[in-house]
Length: 174
Image (cartoon, rainbow, N blue to C red; front, top):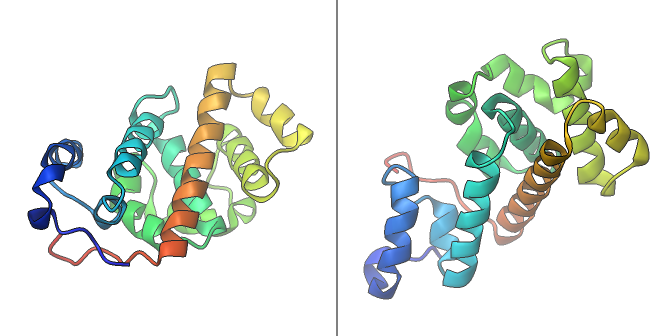
């Protein structure tokens, strides 16, 4: 699909300015694609900001979840956006990012992180299970469990939308 060229859409300038401000001046391709539907672009922006920056989940756990969902959903765009720069900024090493493809075989993750990753696997594959919910509920309070679930769901949505629409990576100068 084509990407919206902001110079051709002055009516979107207010929304683009808000997105650019939150993204340190960048208008990445996902937003350039979503701007075909401004209301969806705005809702996506709001949801993404909420699940990334307005939860009690620490940044490290958040990045582990996002990267795991990207592996499960075969979403190279998400992996490229988060690995290594965003992940490393939250304390996730490149080795840990790579281990997330098969995290059960790794000893790099804490018990709490492993419970979250098991929950992510189940929610992504099967929506939910009593056992995964019980394991996660033992280590996360109700608010955190809601946030973990919505973060997982949001990035499952991201992966499916990005993959279905065949979103291209940013050019190196972006």
